[in-house]
Image 1: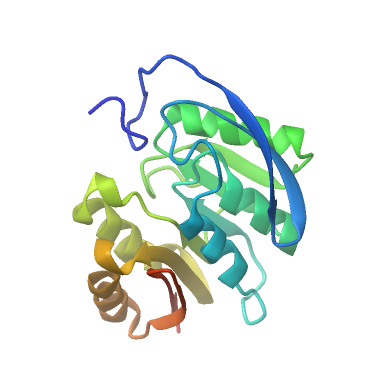
Image 2: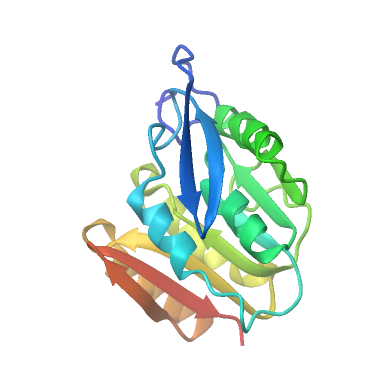
Length: 200
């Protein structure tokens, strides 16, 4: 269990790689490592989530990226929106990489730190919470991310997540409907569903 990307301290030997990637019209230089999710490129689900994220109707306030990994979602949304973005992950190695990637891309309006889901938040409440949840950590963890978001959002704030249909998008949508009373399928792309609920 200790070597999954959702482990607190992966024990794999370091194997750093560096590469460039464009998200929401901005080019980023990332460094990644063994023991983190999608180390060789920004995974397709995260790309779809970033492109689908919409801040037009959001209240003023920060964004929270739950399960930030080495940082592609949170860093790209900070650059695109200019908002403060808090980025959390249980994986200490991922957090350190995200901090390095913020520095190398000269992004300062971020708070990046270790947290097991919502246990240790620094900038709550949020205008938006985004997540590409760790499906392999199990349904309980994923649904904890979905249900826990409500209490940490501002009024009119949104929760936006990406989940593949075959990995539980229908049950995630049902859970978000239960919690928020609404859930919109913002987009579908190659089996990836972008689901959004608003705290009314």
